[in-house]
Structure formats: C-alpha cells, structure tokens
Image 1 (tube, rainbow, N blue to C red):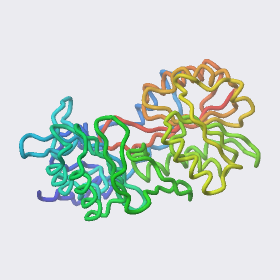
Image 2: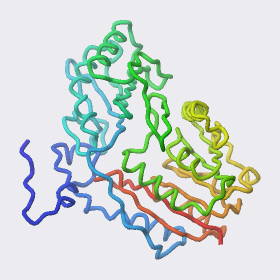
Image 3: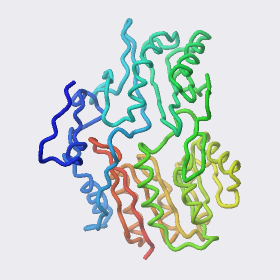
Image 4: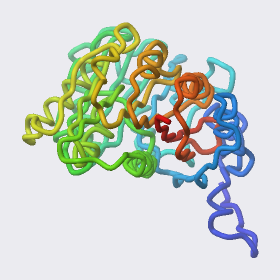
Length: 373
C-alpha cells in the first residue's frame, strides 16, 4: 500500500492524527479516520453537565501516541482451509482479517501471520475462537480460547510456536473455561511504579503505556496533602496499576473483585515487602459494596470502576464524607450517573482530565477529582 503524502504545510501532529488504514470503514475498531473528527473533551463536559457540574474547567485533552496499544482480543474463524484473524466488522459478527493496524504495537501486528499458521494446525480450533494478546515488559503473553479441547499434538505445536516467536507465556482454554498453562519460557512481567507484577493470562491492562502514565499522573496530582500514615482506599484495583503508585504517598487499602488479579497483586506485595504500605482484598463490590464504616477515616478514595460504573457502591461512597474522591472513568455516561450522586452529597469538582487512549473511537478515559464541600 503506498504511503500517504504529508502536505507541505502539515505538522507532525496533523499527520499522525490520521488513520490511513486499509481496513478503515470495514473494521469496527475505528469509527472515524481522524482524531479531530471527534471532540472528546465535549464528551466529558457533557457528562459533567448532566451530573450538575456545568461549565467545568477541563484540563487540555491528552492524546496518546498511535501504534502503542499493548492489549488486544482478536476474533478467529475457520472456514475450510481459510483462517480469519482480526476484529469484527462494524455492527457485525463477521471478522475482518487484520493485516495492519495504526493502533496496535507493531510487534503484535507482526505476530499475526505466524498465529494464522498456528491456528490452521490446531485440532482444538474447529470454527471460532479468540486470541488475547498482552504485550508485557519483555514480550507477548498469549491466551487462546478455542471451541474444542486441546490435544497433545496441539500442545506440542503451541510450545514450538512460543519458542519460535519468543512468546513469554502461552495458555489455552476451551471457551470461557479456566485457562491452562502450556508453556512459560520467561517470566511474564509488567512493572507498575517500579514493582514487577506477574498478571494472569489475558489480564486487564490499561490500553497503552502512555495512557497508563497519564492516568497515574492525574490521579497523584488529585491527592490531598498526605502524611506518612494517611490512608487511601482504592476500589476496583485490578493488578495494581494505580495501587503501587499510591503506596509511595500513603498507606493503601485496595479492593478488587477478580480473584486472579488479587492473587497477582498480593504476590507482588509480599515479594517486595510492601505489606506495611498496602493490602489487597478480594471483594465483589457490585454484590457487597464497601460500607460507610469501612471508609471512615480515609484521606482519599480512588476508584476505577468497570464500563457500567460503580453501581450500588456509589450510595455508600456518597454518604462516606471522604474529603477527596478521584474517579477514573472509561465511560462518560456512567460517569454522569455516578458523579450526580456525588453532587447531591455536596461534593464539588476540582479537576477533570480527558485522556484519549482510544484513537478514532468514541471511547474516552478521564480522571475527575471531587472534594467534599
């Protein structure tokens, strides 16, 4: 494919803000072909207005670089001898066979041809499956979810694939069953604020390293003045993206609903002698929200809820009286609902930072800081 020509009067930012992908208009990964086509700051402003924070002063939109996305869940189909591997078409179950992507880390894209060859030879791949790739500190961590049980021949082929393609770890599962480790050729490590963590296969990561950094920076900037023994409560803590950064500033009491994420963070805490600074507890906050009494005395609370928002947890949070709440959102609509409860409880808005780590889509990350009036 010929490379697009940069106009003589175009800046670097203008050039890299364009998609220029041969799959654009077919693949559902991108809704527009220019970052300028969507006013993402307006999404955040609208959400805050709905929550009764009109005319909120937003920080400038932060745009993360292209070709840095480090996590992808690819769909795979088999039709006869044809293997299709990529993202779904827009508003369709059909899969677009991906040959390039302006969003993904190029090292992930470079794996796709070898993955197609691997899939063609797997007996456990009948008609449909998925390939989840996380790019960690030193390489790829791959989880395959296939539609049949893996055979001994499949396992040998997976091991050979891992060796040939320098894969850190490769795991397999039938459907949504628990995954089984096939090979681990090197420690699958991702480092958060200097602390190495070994995530479970297919673990949730922030989309890009740059996006992660900006979220951490905005969160830390939103903290109140803390003493050495100050306590920060963290909800939906995951594998520790924010936890280890927060622990440098206060004692962290973290909660997470995914057992494998809790296990990963807890192991890192114990290995690096951080038990005096932080703790992680397994708790499904959608079914058993943290009580007001459990939040009493915290200097700040940080939450990074799922796409649907914090749900029932917001009622207790609104009643807690915690002086500072930092809400990390990946869905402006859910943010509007949850922030409205904080407004009703007397919280004022201090800062709101929009972060675009999902280029060419309508998705938006944001970090919003609230203080009790």
